[in-house]
Image (cartoon, rainbow, N blue to C red; front, side, top):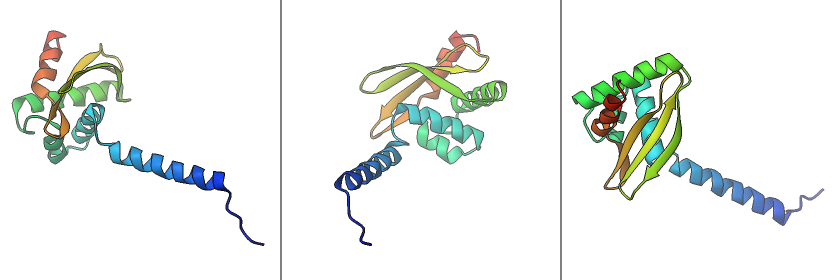
Length: 132
């Protein structure tokens, strides 16, 4: 028995491959991914990754304070966070995030050259305004 190629099946397979490759490439691109990567780096204690996704070095006081906040927030809720809204300009995104059991907080992400990075200083200013 010979296998016949169904053009619609081939087209569907090609479309699936393209879709998966696009999602794979852009998984770590964008302001939301900078926040996600920051959280993951805090959880895994990966300062090299924090350096990649932050505007400040991992040993700066702002990053250390933000790492403490993320550690406490994730320990309280256990289920992570959810982005509720975001406002975007060409070089900055302000996101409102919700952690289980906490009031929403603001994350500030800025575009530097070719990538989005968390701005720990501006994010902490928002936390301080909320009384954290």
